Length: 379
Image 1 (cartoon, rainbow, N blue to C red):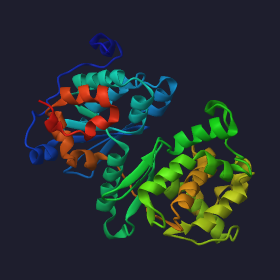
Image 2: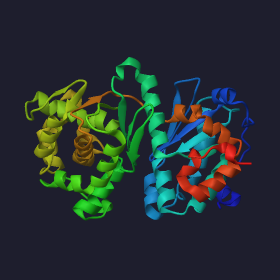
Image 3: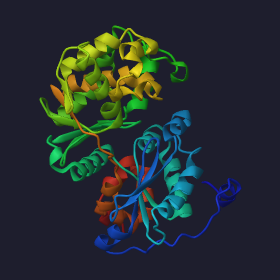
Image 4: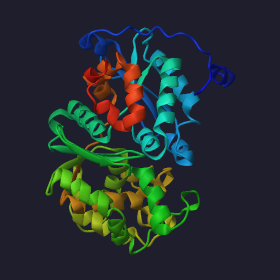
């Protein structure tokens, strides 16, 4: 348990926040602030506005160190208390969803410790904090994409790659696993390159990288196929694909360096295969040389990107799942997808807020599945 003294010593002034009491769901969802607590930070928003506020917090680094959310606890409390002020919301309650890093802490660490951590977060911030199962997170993301994109979303599924997880989600089904951009890079370094991620240079990934990635991801790929079927159509909405992979493929195609079908709206598996073959034995300098040092306006920012070392490993991750699900072409639409609306509209969050002590007890006992249990089972 984190003490009040520790919080004050860390420089967080403990004030009472004017949170609204429990109310009917329709009324509460209009007033509440929703928090999307991802692997790299927190976003906050409301149902009544498209405005969001965010802060960076590296939860993955924290949880990878000791399977606990501990070093980031104080910044979390501070963010939950201050972000609503950026939205000019001062009197509403708050509901937060914790995702990939929090699931990791539950699965690899001590559920009792996480339950006590979340209880302390609630005590200090007034925000009702829930750890959300992977498939429910996927449904939040799909609904956000559907609302934001409207008729432009022409496929039944979206693919979202975050720092800690990858998800394929539809309105009524989905699948995901803890292999986002950073999580997959860590696994690639440790299990394929056999070096610690802290000293790992992913490039060149090596000529055998695709085959090794298929073997390494075989269980996840099989699980995804069982859940989603094959020959499916998917739209990628996340930054690693939309702002890096797709522009690179488009540039290589336009320069006639690779074959395959690439246009403004997406790319096919042939183009991705050829790009992996082209780049697999090049270090970053060699990759940048192929890209003409990013002089083309469509890729100008990529050579200076902090994620440049992930370009090819991202391609490997997407390729394995495209093969497993027999996705011949990936559609691409840039969209700022968050889980804010999902948690605000999920009636379970409001019901569990009224029985929060019970939720925390079930979290300690059942882990991430606690959120899925019917709150009416609590007395």
